[in-house]
Length: 576
Image (cartoon, rainbow, N blue to C red; front, side):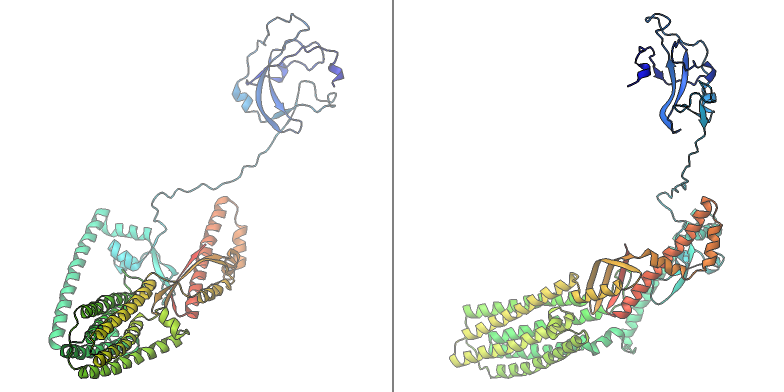
């Protein structure tokens, strides 16, 4: 394979170890024959394409068999190695001469040097913000005055920043940097300890002020109770003049009268069926009074403890009403019916009972018609059928009145039929069976009310068709790529909460920002970027503005969604 070396024995053995580089003048000449012990030489190993290999510096011991005995120990040069600083300061990298160029102008033992330049990637230094970083926080003027005990005149001297308002009734509002407010507070009060003392003093004054307000409210209430309240009807009271409030008030009045007359009929006749009807009317009156309380509480405005309002109070009142119907109505009716079967009693004349039942049938029927008309009107507004409106319990108060009055009408007919059989046959068992039938009817109504109101309180979703309509509206916007994790919850009283994860198109949002900017000015800013610091300032400036533009897009989508769908009261669009 190597003809030029076939006739020669192996006479050179090399051992390489890390050491300093020897001067070129001390290297042994590269001769084909007769190599001697040339001492210790430090070599740079290079590749023909001038790329440095990872072998580093080396110390080579030469051994020869041509002059001395094979067993002679190796000899090393007597000169000292050059210092490492001298070697490392040399930027030249020696390269072995290319094959076939040995007879050129470059002398043997010398190497050609080239300089390699390596480009280092510039990286910005990472900032450490720590566990708490509030320098870039914004606070409102009210917060600044309350938390840092400042006056409006103190805030006039600070830098004002206009930001987007989170409320629908205002476009933008003024905020201040928290760091500026803290510095101003220290300037005004002198130290953190003095600021803390002032805070505690103001809290004590605020507590005394609240106590005085409470005391004055109690005195005002007593004054109104004594002299009478001459103020016009308030909002909650006006709710009982129309809609579900009107239905409930009519039902309370009629059921209260029915209970009084049915109770007199039971005392006079001793009929078990009449007792069940009297208990039925009493349960209806109590439950509808509870519904009226739920309606009055549901119209209260949201507060800090209940940000989504009190609309669920109607469902809570209806749920308690269902439980009350089961306990008071069904339970007592079953008990009296069972006792009538076990211990039958003779009954007096049932003439007055029939008259009272007839009057109750007319009154309960009138209340039932009022509830039916109200549900038809509401179902027409929501574009659903009568059956769907009742089954979905969209208006729990009207639903309770409807079902109670329907059960009352059926119960009156059932009680009258059983009492008639008792009058014809003289057998009191028919009357007891009528009481059991009325109790079963009330139990069925209570079970339906408990189920529907429990489903409403658990936070049920709206119809899939409506969810699809809201999703398509968002997906048709050019700034939106996709919509994920959609949740549309019925809050009751025709209120819907809509939540979705939105994947925005960054190019469209950026173009929306650029359309409002001066492109020539931005181009001049780009041309002035010369250093990484200039680039960082440029990117931070426009990056912050693009984030603000994204927030504007979110606000726009929320407002349009509420405007096109009035039932949607709360919208939460989260950026994906």
